[in-house]
Length: 313
View (cartoon, rainbow, N blue to C red):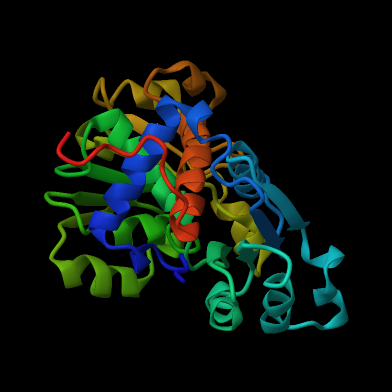
């Protein structure tokens, strides 16, 4: 039995195979509509979510399975003091696989140690968000045709942004990747990402405060919102929340084939008029998230792929 807690739980080869499966699902979703018949997914969301929770639910329903669970901590037995370990022990009696979002870093990992079913980390605090990373990889590969040789700009909240941390950790496994880290000093990427991940893998990177100066050299621009829920001081949030706003004028500085990604929700860090730009890929990202989670559920449950390439073909 396997879990997905950290994006590096899958090797690069396994990641590529999962993305290939997600692409086959996107090409012919009807072929997969009975694959998970009679299987049940538990969505254990201790923190509010729209896209991730509904994406998991849509993925399981698209595979012909069923969904149960809770959408927030205050409608679960956590309000009575039940531990994560006990919750997953109970849920293991009801479901075949579980997706967990939790505000505390490491909670899904702890759950996996007590679970009798596969556990998927659907986001733990400011730590990791591996299924969003898989979604990002699928979108980047779809837009650029490769995950190698890209210059990726990450802009906004790089300190608390779990999607940013997961993406960096995964992309360093591909050749010729370079990062441009765009943020105010207070929201720069954590030191461990710099020392252990980037410098530890000998990956070139630059840190800057200027989005405009960075735009011409980027193949991918990954925008993030400044997350109010991660701040202890509202004054700091108010001061930093509008640090970077992507506008049509700034898009004019970019390459014709650059792609703009965003894990969503956005607040005001991407102007609405950017939505009409063909380089805006964030709603395509949302759709890809369903295919990726369908592929992940199939992979962790060991379900057969009706469209798998035949050997020797």
